[in-house]
Image (cartoon, rainbow, N blue to C red; front, side, top):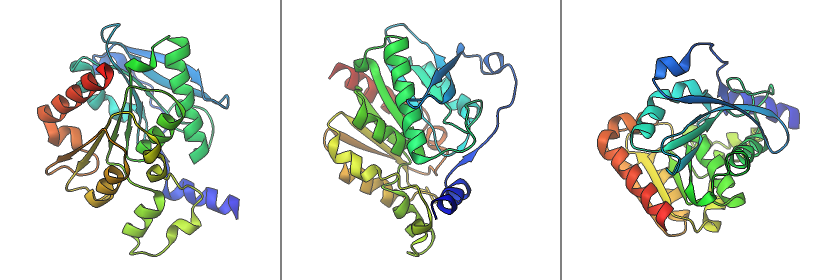
Amino acid sequence: LGTIMSLLDQFFVYHPDPWKDQDWKARSGLPLEDVWFTAADGTKLFGWYVENAATSAVVLWCHGNAGNIINRLENLRELYRIGLSVFIFDYRGYGRSQSLRPSEEGLYQDALGAHDYLTRTRMIRPERIVIFGRSLGAAVAGELAVQKPAAGLILESSFPSIEAVAKFHYGGVPVHWLLGADFKLIDRLPQLSLPKLIIHGDKDDIIPLELGRQVFEAAKPPKFFYVIEGADHNNTYQVGGAAYFRRWAEFVQTAIRS
């Protein structure tokens, strides 16, 4: 049964894209630094580090369930433009990172390895790190924040659990019983006292606003809920525009000062 659930997870939960070899540094206009590091369980992973000022806040980015880090370059450019350093990495099975199959426990191990890379290899103090998770990555970010210190946590297009999403999409039919993955972000939130910014588009038809609101309500203060009018699941930063990035910058500055 475990094997069947794992196979169904690959179909329903994870949608990785393989790597495309191009000069991404030249194409993006960003000072992308290729980083190879290991997950907590030793899996070899790949990411990009983009350094702004040596003293700037560092965003540790746990991306969503589809594509790979290449698909986040436009968004990455905007975060760099507002003065942030960013470390974005691919989970196992995504992009250039090793392993054939992602898994819930595997993604958690990957995020732990990314945090260790920043704090142990680059010697960045946790008080400068803001963990960012979008969609499935929000659950990964929540688990990471339970395990490791950081200044703040940004959760975008997030959901309480795989169960909640499955019930929404399948009219209450317990499809989640067939899946191995839980991603119960809602269980992590009451344990987290660091500042949290929870962002959601009000036109999100993949993870409806109501699920984002449940995430916010489960979180301990200090917490802030930022709804982007007209945004769906994947275009929050595009629809949100300048106001979205202003909110980001304000939250990060407050978090690293607190």
